Structure formats: structure tokens, C-alpha cells
Image (cartoon, rainbow over all chains, first blue to last red; front, side, top):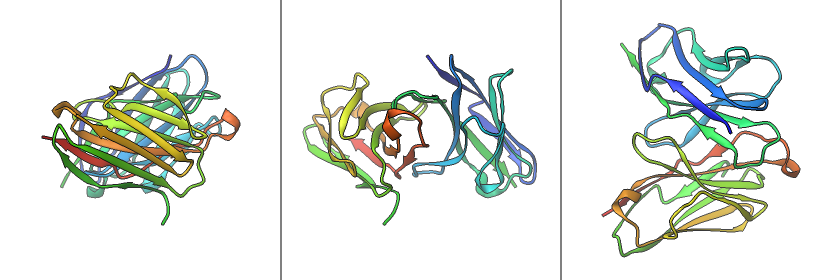
Length: 115
Length: 116
């Protein structure tokens, strides 16, 4: 079985400050890992993905995440927050080689950016 | 038109109504999904279709009935819903070559359903 835990359902940062959204996963086999972003009344948009290549993954909008096997973590970071980054962020895990259905989402973290 | 398109974007229906949600993908994917997103809850996977066959039904009540007539279209037929079924319903698609490997799921913008 696999699971995802996102620490902190709400995170607030000032504009220009570092963004750090935490994700820890549990998987018995090597995982694929994803971060998605959801703006109000929109669907989910892929930010970045880890598929067992480089452990540091760069995504869209200046976000990046680092896969740390020893810590079973895949935290999302951005050096400088922008007002447009305010949204909900979801971490997701899928076991490699698994069937289409085995994608598990975390509960989400709402990011607020303060002026 | 590209990506995953869902219609309608908003739907209000009474508990005795019958309605359908539509999803269309133009990405050449071979798997399609319905998710339910309720306030304060994680995304719930409802149904998965792979190569037009339903491969998963996560204990969804029978008042929700999916249909996948081809690899590009997915429907969710609704009847005699309850107020607790009010939520954002998201459709997604992905490419799963020969059942192995995986590409990321692409999501539609969702249908905001309100049951009154």
C-alpha cells in the first residue's frame, strides 16, 4: 500500500519569501511522485514529477522538488513567492509498474501569499 | 481544442433529477478517471477506465454510473443524488503503455455539482 502525508494544511508566506511545502510518502516499491497545483474553481495542473531520473526535479513557475529516499520525502520549494502562487498544492504518489489506478493524493496544502 | 475538457462547468440539480457529466480528452491517452473532490477531504478516485474497460470502481454508490464509449470520451450519469454528493467532479486522463509505466494524469477543470 502507498500513502502520502502533507504536513500543514495551510501555509502562509510573505511575497518574496521562500516557499516550502512538505510531502512525505510511504511506498513499498520505488515510486513516481508528483506535485499538482489547483487554482480556485479549476482542475489540477502538474507542476513537476519524479520518475527515478534526477533526484532534483525542476518544474513550472520556478518550483522544484527533491526526492530524498532516506527521508521518504519530496518537498516542494520556490525561492521567492509571488502573489500568483496562492493556490492549493497536492502531492501524489504512484508505484512504478503499477496499474493506472494506483495514484494516491495527499490532503493538500493551501498556500497564502501575503503582500 | 486540446487537453481535457469537462462540461458543464457548473450544475445544479434536484435530488430526483437525472443528469450527465461529460469529459473529452484530445491527448491520445488510453486511461480515463473520475475523481470527486469535496471540501476538507482528499481527492477520491471513483472510477478508472483503461482501454475503454472499467478497471476500478471504488465502492461508489450506484446512483453514479460511468460510461466510456471510446478512449476519448467519458461520462458520469447521475440520478437520485443526495445533498452530500455536492462536490467538484474532476475528470483526468493518462497514457499507460501496455499496462506498464505511467505518464502523469492530466485533469479537466471540473464540474461543480450542487444537489438541492
